[in-house]
Length: 461
Ligand code: CO
Image (tube, rainbow, N blue to C red; front, side):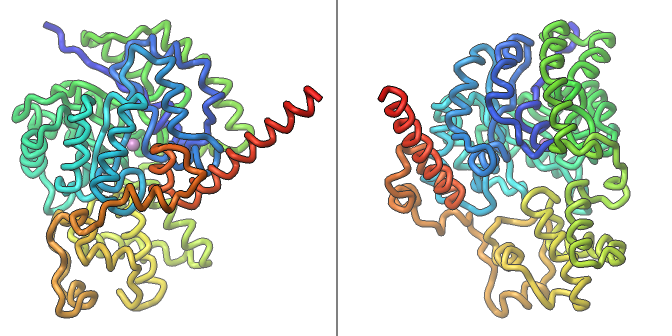
């Protein structure tokens, strides 16, 4: 029997986030939702990641309401979100009751699949969200952040996938946030994981370095079940490989699928003028759609590279770029080889730049790196340099338990702190995750409603 390939469409989440920093308001894509729902995707990735932050901070939109609105229209296709385990959508660890309530409300508001990952691949940071996802009847798809280092290997990933399966997860994902997973590595990895696990396997990559199509083709040949793609006019560069292109190639090779090419064209025709508009108004920098193979040489993600460049530029120290690029892998090694994914990519990058710019290594250490060394992010994949531990902790030992266990419950306190402008549990969760911007959003919502009332009275009067 021919092998079947399924697709997850990322245009509303990752493609949007990677190309235009998630700046598309709900009204601008509402009209395409019914068609998207009709195409035959396995799932639509529509929420989580930066969508939540961007809705509150820039779009003056209630992220929960966005999700409910999408769900009202998309009734056939599973809605998917990205969740950073115990960090939810933020950068610190939240107490278990907050994590459970967040997962519960995400499912109740319309999410069917939660892709859960931890920057360090420390599975203890996923336990609670995976458990709650399953309890609420959604698919718990656990993603491993892909990276290469002397402590990572196909065998170490296979072993980890077994542990994930034992945790009760319903699906697996190889998450290549930097677009550095090569076709050969993908083949070996997918083959290894599929040979040792019965779970559905998703592969997620970006086109940043240009490897994406080849990586997906080899992944599918090795038995991957689902690939993440973006509708063509929002694909490429820092976004995903194009949906239609991948489908065209796989269809000719004899793979079966549920996608309807004519319906995909309708979706792409809808997004073309949207893309043209963001190109003209500058929201979309055309460079984001270009191929940049530098990440393959430097072994650091493209986003991290551009952050380093702009950080050095603003300090007027761009001439130090090479020194910083040489320092980055050294810092990463001393940190125990964390995958360079948010927030670790920023933390390692900033520390490497500081080490170079200050002229003395670890003279200044950021408070995030201190917390990391204390064990507040979880187990690093390798060993943290003992000298560095000593420098930061003196004679103290790092915390080795599951960090969230040290945190007091947060929902009741969050409710108190959020105050009367928070109207329900969803508002309280928005507040706990992004306190300042949620507060601003609540105030602006209140004002808008008061203005509306005045306006109606005036009109009537
Ligand atoms: Co991604």
